[in-house]
Amino acid sequence: MNSEITYKALKQNDFSCGDYILVSIRQEDMERIRQWRNAQMSVLRQSVKLSPRHQKLYFENVIKSSFDDKETKQLLFSPIKNNHLIGYGGLVNISWKDKRAEMSFLLDDQRANKKNLYKEDMTNFIYLIKKLVFEEMKFNRVFTETFAFRAFHISILEENGYVKEGILRDHILVSGKFYDSIIHGIIKGYVL
Image 1 (cartoon, rainbow, N blue to C red):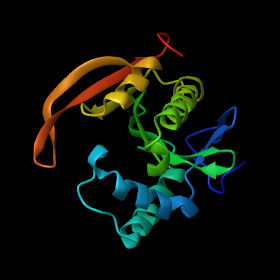
Image 2 (cartoon, helix red, strand yellow):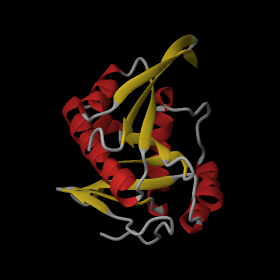
Image 3 (cartoon, helix red, strand yellow):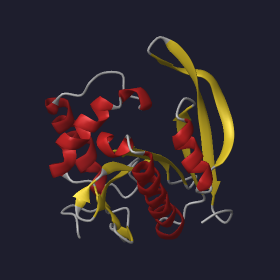
Image 4 (cartoon, rainbow, N blue to C red):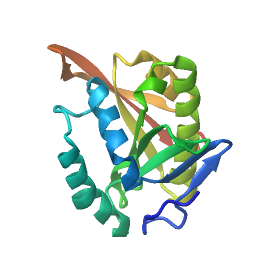
């Protein structure tokens, strides 16, 4: 399955593992992604609901230009399972100079509510991201920031080689309460 637009920063734009494939983010998926983001704002660094107009402008003004940028700050993908979009994610805060990137991942909110699906989907996503980061991009490091109340999400990260590196205490405010952010990372050569 080839996506219609590809990243010039990458030689390969589709990554697969079994029934899972990551393709460059597609414009046709923008509305579903917007709905998932709005439904799961408590786990994102998003403070206001996104309108269809905002989502369209973001795709037109930010995402589209990232396809032509050889050192883009983000590489976003549509994870597909059995030909169905199941979420979105990729790499953000990319530093080409330092050979590092932050992994982002958001699953369809219906799948996210089913622990067995969440674990399977996220595990396969992490596997594909590690292939992208360490084999395709030849980067040294991938990291994540996760809000501390997401214990199940954190357990999946750790089962897949992410090492807890630090805590940003009382870092985020969700529904009037402060929570820590947990930083995890993988260094090339330590886990793949």
